[in-house]
Length: 149
Image (tube, rainbow, N blue to C red; front, top):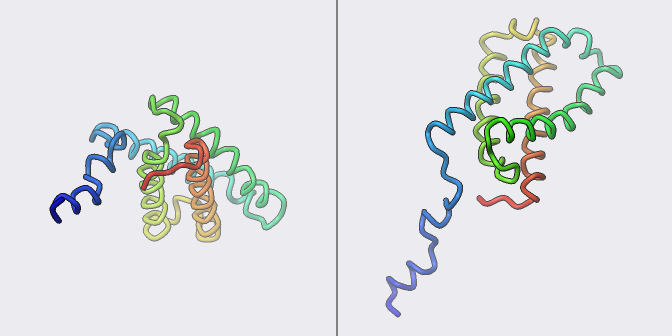
């Protein structure tokens, strides 16, 4: 066996690594739009419920606890609505959460009033990031803990 053949057998081809993971531009756009929608919903919830939730008391704790089951239910709903197999949501979740994190960071810097004020914005931005983390946990759990990277 030549050195060239040995090297080509040892290195996976790009199509082998991406098999079943390639999303069309339309599907990527769909998941960007869903991520933006999820972020907007969360930002509006922070704006209107934040002043009564971020009190360092029970409501504050309940908000963070509620994020976990909400992320699992939302991931299931997004999979159904987009026609994505539930065990294949990790890739789409990366697109959606990247979009939401980008929008959250942008709003925190240039439009904190969207969240209803500086105090609420700090807590709200953190709560949104916490919730997005739970979306990743949900997607990985639905994938059976198996993620191809």
